[in-house]
Length: 204
Image (cartoon, rainbow, N blue to C red):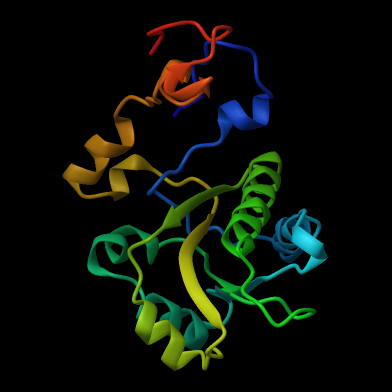
């Protein structure tokens, strides 16, 4: 199924091709590809080179570990994410290791790392689906996450499957149009909500 973004301005093909499916194949993700997407995250930029991200990874190669990860999904995501061959939980260290103070950019840095991971996955023919619907307290408990780390998101990773494997309501969401806010709503200049003069107006 072609889900390439129809952009108003030229962007890299990998960014146009990235999307978030729910239909995942049961085809395993090759170890070298899994390591490549994690390596891409490792080489992301971060403030003071703190690298505050930590990832918990479960694959179907280890059924017990995978079931533990599946048990940490909320019902809405459990319906489809259990089919993905890899589940990842992201966490972030909230304070600097080098200084005794909070790291204000830790979540930003995690986002950069996950973006690297996502683009690398796309380059390798894989897909990711980011999830907020996870059991945060349970993840902290079952994985013994230290107090200074916060659980942030889940990620399903794998090859695309078949839309027919999804329940009817999720099939409709899978086929729905890909939309984004126009640049005029998100790029400001001079003052808040004043679109920058170089941005085309009302181009959705």
